[in-house]
Length: 373
Image (cartoon, rainbow, N blue to C red; front, side):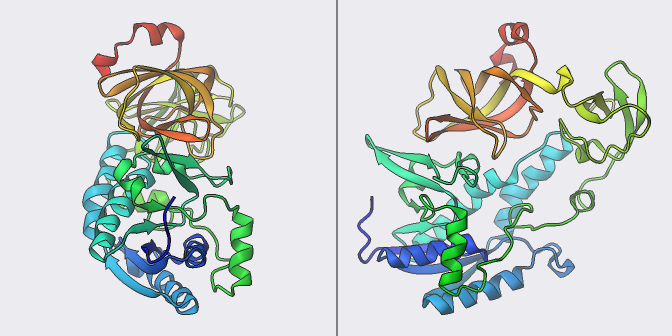
């Protein structure tokens, strides 16, 4: 898609093996590569969670080995204002947000992109497993060949400008090959564990972390019939479909979170993974984003309601900034605050934020999108 000779790419280098191999591949393709290390969290660095110093040291070693220059930038204030405050607000409202989507939109493909352009970049690159295809005068976001690692779910909020400036070198390479290439090249992070923590914040005890910022309000755990089964430490610590952390003993169970009542501070649970209350025939989504800029009024496509879920057949009807989504098969644990992301074959179309689950065909027919928009 791009003529590589002389083109300057600023690569987001994190300390992980994916971005390191992405740098290798860009060099092999003839790009002029500069690495940029982003620091985006400072609240409790001394607690040893973020390991920013270790990440930076590994990034420096990678750049020395590859012969590329490394710059650093601090986006901590941008991260707090654009991502983390939203993250806290959503949990406070009883929803389950996905900060990685907003982190990509606001930090990696906005603040980072703007900074890279000032550095003279023609393009930016990351170690994401995704692809960009230019077709019919549009930039399309494409699933990675490694379906198990595909990250288009987290990238669905990008637009035409961001995709026109982005290169994803790992589009066609599987993770095991990434590690093999890194080991062959002598990269110091070839066997480094993948990060699974909160975007830029790192891995930690999530309950303890969240409690630092939001006051917990204990309350009752009840069945849908109103029987009290126990106590919860705070609704924000629980999400729909969750089993762990309920501490419900006795002969029954296992128990799963089915719903929350924020006004009464009640956590509702049901018995058994197959309980009908855990399944939804559809959902209502808002704050829609379409990568090519055009919103369809009705669409038959596939969708994911969480990362790594296999795509599910559905029908989408939109009105304004909201959509009704009807699934061909009931979906388990539809969680408000998470994203639904739409696809046609390998092309990611965009997505929206889940507002509520719809649990019957009757509800889908009678609920008003305008009322929920």
